[in-house]
Image (cartoon, rainbow, N blue to C red; front, side, top):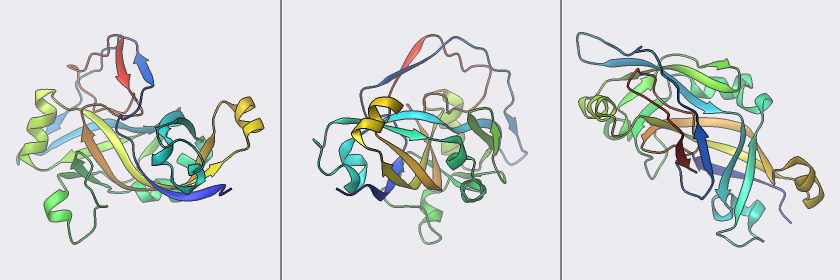
Amino acid sequence: MVKATRVRFIDEATTAQSFKDKGIQLPTQRTFKDSGAMIAPATLARTGIMQYLAKECGAAFADMDPNAVVNIMTRPEDLFDPASLESYRAAPITIGHPDDDVNIENAKDLQRGHLDGLPTQDGEDLTGHIVLTHADAVDLVGSGEAEELSSGHNATVVRVTDEEAAQLGYHAYKTNIRCNHIAIVRRGRAGTARIADEQVKMFDQAFVD
């Protein structure tokens, strides 16, 4: 059985797990440049267990029903590894996840902003400031229609044994995490990754993962 495989992840909500964030009020921290570009603090990713379909997780889960739900752990030592953090530096911001990774050839069509420099660790979360440089992205976030974030990244998935899974509560963990882009989405898999603003009210709202 293949125990490890390289997988492209898009952490937008697709499967059946629900996450709930209790009601909080976030202070207004969005600012605008004279050009109209928006700068805002944001939570980009988190550690912990997230759920995927087996078919999203590569060859390591080829022996399972493609629609079976698997628990994948993102460990702090992997998300906050210096090479992982460096891969997030100036990551492009997109509206939704593109079919292909963002590169210098397609960035002019896909990119709507970028992460300002390196992100930082804030407890279990990866945080930073995003800069939105295109009107469609600013309008989308400003309207509240989509203001969650989803990390598009590649990672090596290491599957644990069934005995370990029963003890640990997850079937595999990610390592060698490398960010390609950060997408603005309606519902993010992490549940907590969002753009900060006072209008964002998380009131026992279920985030479908």
